[in-house]
Image (cartoon, rainbow, N blue to C red; front, side, top):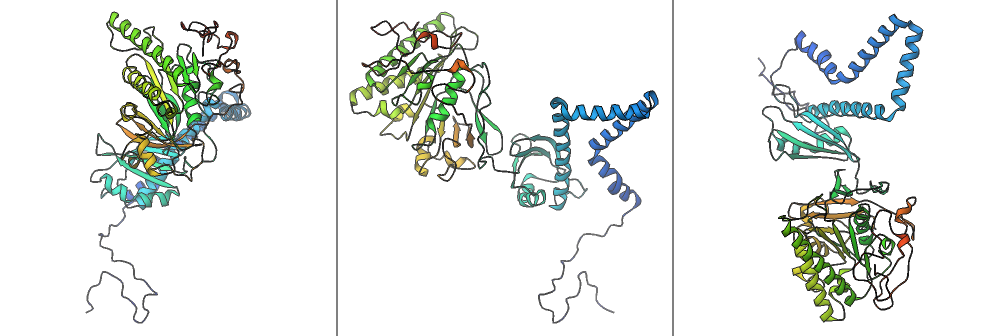
Length: 499
């Protein structure tokens, strides 16, 4: 009697050209009629339940209309309703998204079975919620009994290969270990050659208290910035797009009629397009910048007296005190200039303004190429909770902008091979996390921006020879806003207020 073998016999002399399959150690289960009913009918019907429901609904409607109006009229009504649903966006888009989610759920179930993620009870990780993004899909998956998230993480490559996508990322839910967050990336949002338009470019008005969309992260999610009670420092090599991305924040501020904008631009041409919307625009004059900072600190003290009189701790929406946005372009020009005494005075005043301006509703946004300690004092640099690092030439420059160790916490790091002009950046949100994303793109033709709305039109006015500031007439200010040439309190000696 031959001995029992649980594996096929290897042919003698064939060598490794014929590979024997591995032994089957799972017990053989004979399929019953109920199993065939489940596998061949019930499971496919449940997977296509949305499509089958639509077909059944269409058939019932056709039969009912045929009995009421006749077959010919029913045919015309069904065809007309189909055309209307296909043409109207508010009916076509929800239906298309629902069908896409149903397709994703079916493919995910098959991928889990092929990746051997099914449990002993033939249960696979179930998709509880599916969100469609520009980069792919984001799933909230519930694991079956006996499964764990690390097993799904190890099978991520198998899942990506079956789904024919770029990458599958699996992370554990921080609250519940039975749930996992799965990101299915069909394309790289950071490598898309098409720029991302700013969502608020056609908005007539917005509030600076609301989150400002500034880009898209590598998972396809929208990245927003909330400026009140925050200060932002942007850095990057020359030509990285610091001025371009900062102007997105200025544009959001100018869309709020109650916001007061003060600009410091030593190059004069970067922020000059906003001179019709700004309360002041300071040029390459450190002494004048110190005077403007002293005026801002005086207003800061007045605001705290107002808050004390009203028994309030900070400025909130609706209390009557407008937000004040201060943008300092090329901060190193004012903090590390040839006049050491004036630069030190500016640094001390700006430190006081940034440190105390949070509760008073006065936000500071500054840009520089590399905020090292010899350029920007550390006692001033550490006060900026939000860090915005654009393209940098060295990893050390990213560490200087974001802080030591923060770029490594992002999934990706900006490199010099990425598209220029502020498309990519690493953004650090205070002490929470660091994300790598791609900034929105906004273009204009100077002296009028953007193309279309005339409320943003700005033309160069007269330039003050004493301080280098630009001035603009009252008729070129925004409607509904306070005139840029008046109401400043402290004006030019010739009677025209400085912008």
